[in-house]
Amino acid sequence: MIASLLMVVGGFSLLTLSLCSSRSPQPTLDNSTVDSLDLDRYTGVWYEIVRKPHFFEKGMTHVKTTYTLLPDGKIEVRNEGIKKGKTKVTKGKARTTDVPGQLKVTFFVFPAEYNIMELAPDYSYSVVGGSGDGYLWILSRTPTMDPTLLEGIYSRLEKRGYDLSDIIVVEQE
Image 1: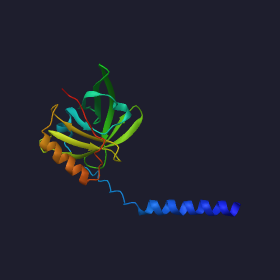
Image 2 (image 1 turned 180 degrees about the vertical axis):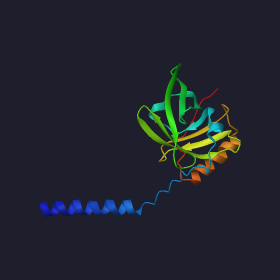
Image 3 (image 1 turned 120 degrees about the vertical axis):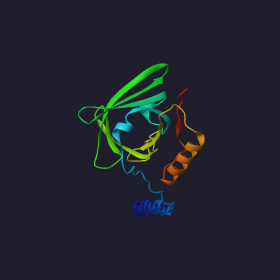
Image 4 (image 1 turned 60 degrees about the vertical axis):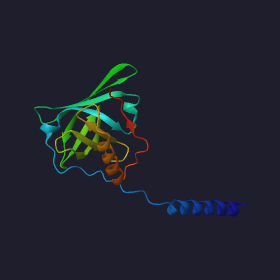
């Protein structure tokens, strides 16, 4: 009886391993950052155009973030949006890292990578990701973006390995 059970479990394990190894490999995520970042130009108001879903912005619309350079070189990050008819505000801090185009952003006590992966030469839009594919934002200096520009960004993000099937287009107007 025990030998039969071991054979069934062993066979099931081999089948499971076989199925897992025959799956096509997941594309490698490219969340590399821009080569340089002018913090003075990056500060100011950014409107959230698109985001990946996550609990801390669930149900929020009219989301915008204001970055303010502080005297100590850190950056104040002020996120605000509307949820259930009320304005919600969350403040955090960011600092630069040794990686150009990367910030470490901390809300409450949780630091996270903030990788500026794409930035318009005139700083009119920014594409930001985290250390994995679960965090992604497309930000703009204006509440709307040209649909053709947005489609180009989507295409480049897919080439980077991002799954865009669950993105949220943020209501701004």
